[in-house]
Length: 120
Image 1 (cartoon, helix red, strand yellow):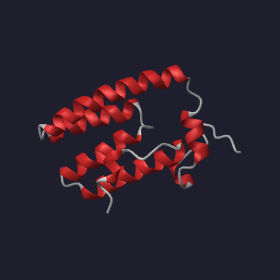
Image 2 (cartoon, one colour):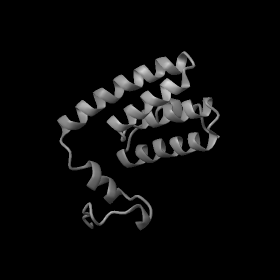
Image 3 (spheres, rainbow, N blue to C red):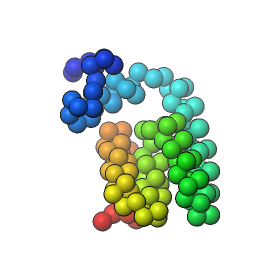
Image 4 (spheres, rainbow, N blue to C red):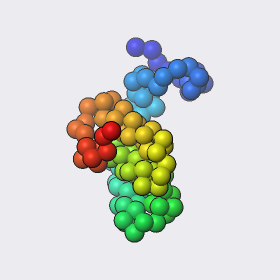
């Protein structure tokens, strides 16, 4: 397996591989990710409250915070897809759903329920 260094990685190098993901996310400690996951879940809960109230702008802002806190969480990506779909941003919704499915495959997780209801 090839090791990637920050100065070697470029989005122009081609598709994002498992080696890239391991480099970017595999070197963190469990405590680091547990704190990040907690923050992401709090932001997600607040985003879903705003989404339910049809405040799509506020929900989108909180969803970005949740993704920034834990970009490896497929639930957040799935809900972002639902939010973008409800906002009429269909191509962005498709991209969010694809990212959620990518993370499910990388982390070998079960499929979140939000993705069952949004399959084409």
